[in-house]
Image 1 (spheres, rainbow, N blue to C red):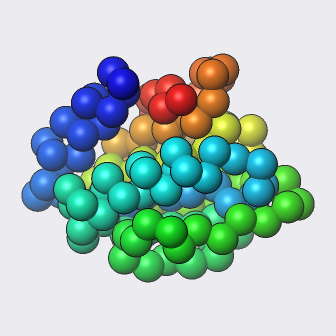
Image 2: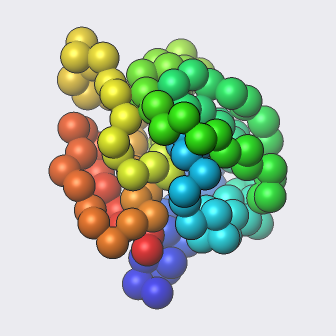
Amino acid sequence: MKWHMKLLSMIQKREDKKIALAVDTSTAEVKSDLINNIVKLFETVKPDTILVQADFKIRSITPVKANTIKYYTHGKSSYTDVLEWAKNEQIDTLFYITDVTGYIYEEIKNVDYELYWLVPDEYLPKVPFGKAIKVA
């Protein structure tokens, strides 16, 4: 439950910032209830959050809404499009729900906005940049 309070506090501290929540939809083998609860938290606390659904490409960009996530079964994931989109849209903070097994172009060494990888797994991998938070 420790991560719940940490995430809630992080969202609340950014109430005047432009934030986005990205969800890796590359596999249906996920903790969908957990992910929907995280999306619902953003929807409740910061309803102007932008929801980005992506796998190897961006599938949709919408206002945040729980129970709207569509998962795929191919398992291919790339974070590059979402990271570049966030830069172009001048996002202040990007939260990305993923297992961090996707691809990032080698040219991308860092981002100029806050990035938090929300990992819905017991294993917390090393992230290339940004900060990883275990949400399992």
